[in-house]
Image (cartoon, one colour):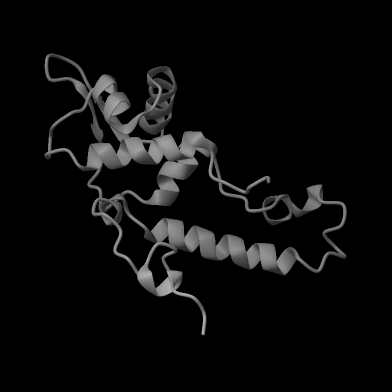
Length: 154
């Protein structure tokens, strides 16, 4: 079955930035450390780190205690910024980002759904900060693994 899913590039970028967010202030982490701890292929991680540096999210430090660290506080860097640093602007569907590209955009009844979905996604990703992702997620009633959602319906 085909799935709509986040790319490995985005997943790895988020895992790497969360790793950096967990470091003591001012402590840089090496590519080897991040790669090993987060199970990210080193060569792929090196390319992702360069994208994050170019986006102004990560800094490089040379020397004996060199490596990489966040350019800003984890509560100032959004999930959206990391995602866009490695993949570019978010577009849930082509008609949202470039309606002139879609041949049926004038007669399609789904365009407003895609637009609202994109608006909500961007709002949510923009308001979610790296600092929010540092602690393990709390179980809620809607979590698939929670006892409330795994009980059989009445």
